[in-house]
Image 1 (tube, rainbow, N blue to C red):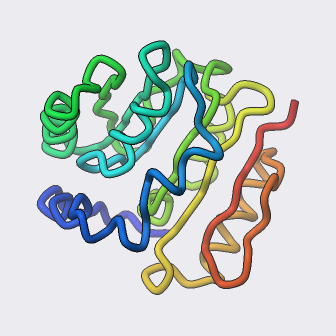
Image 2: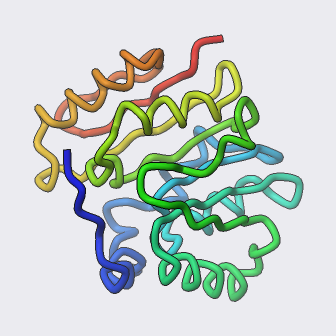
Length: 185
């Protein structure tokens, strides 16, 4: 497990339009996110997925974006304002080791854990926090970057999640480092 946090300036590389060729939020998210949902996105960086999440939850939904770095969140807020979805996004800066979302326990419909769990030093604590935040039956899409994260390390992270009580709702397919986790009902 890493304690390395992606530097804020790398966030500009993460929001490049070229990224949509391989990881298009408009194709990845619709099966999981609907109008009116409350969505949690830890580690959103500058909001590559956050803006699409906000569009999908609509005016009656909300996205809670939690990051360690204020520079990431400030840029995310500016991008959300330009995209016209700022009122649907709540940003929270959290300290290392605490998501700071205990006030949302049992309220979250969906959590997006995209390319960030490998940076979490206490994955058990992290998965426990995500599970506590989710409603019974709520889901978390867990995806890691292939090549940057080895398949064995991903499997260990999935194992940690299941030991924290998550069920695997959509198993890993072929070589993708992607699984849908569900909080038991």
